Image 1 (tube, helix red, strand yellow):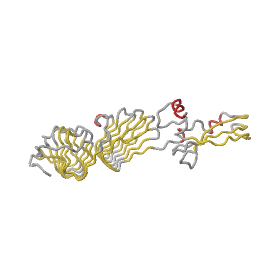
Image 2 (tube, helix red, strand yellow):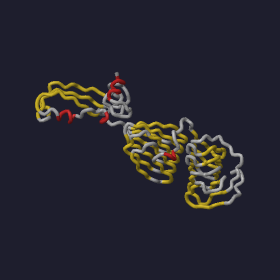
Image 3 (cartoon, one colour):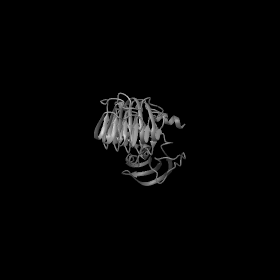
Image 4 (cartoon, one colour):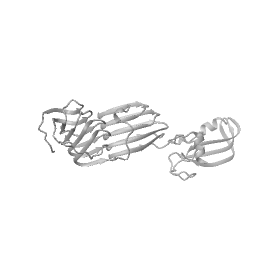
Length: 320
């Protein structure tokens, strides 16, 4: 730690929040992990003696004066910097997580390692998202948010159901989990940290916008065969009560990872079946012609209902 930290000291225990009530430049010393929210520091953030820094702010700032006017310390657990009106210095901590827009400038020369990915940036501040969770070991459920999901801290769980609008998921910290269930919508994920997991249902498209960290996971459920099946066997036979009928149905194909029709790797491979038979009370009692088996999957079927948000006519045109 460099600079003059001989300043008035306030001692706390447990988690501590710097939210504009401390004289700046303020120093935060001895916390476990430190989470700097979007717009958390209205000035320069200086980091000394940290192990890892995960940041969505480029670490190319440099402070003119490294002294502080007040110090926050004590028997601290985690620190949350959310609205500091001036410079902030952090020292003797484990990891620091800095969100997009978290500081005007960042000086991380005192950190052992810095993780920063400038591939892409979210379209808005994570603090403005409809679903926000901050802290340790919280759980929240939400239905059909309109803009985004923001998680800040550790071991939090967020579950979203019925999503119909494109979402940004912004995860800051470690071992957080986010689950998105929806239909015909896109999710873009930004990670600032490590060992986080975002999973989505089979009808949701998901991509990683940027990862300032490591060992983060994005998972998508496989598309079920039901998304490609147009008519089940029971439905086809239900219309064949008595007499001779030619019926067509689809059913899941067993033990296939590649579609025999288009050659693509697929999750939802089905068999398209047809039979010409005499039916008695919906049961075929004599078969005249077994039409054989054809295959389809979500990549080649015009009936696929999945991650591509196209109408049936548009899907047919794309396959011509």
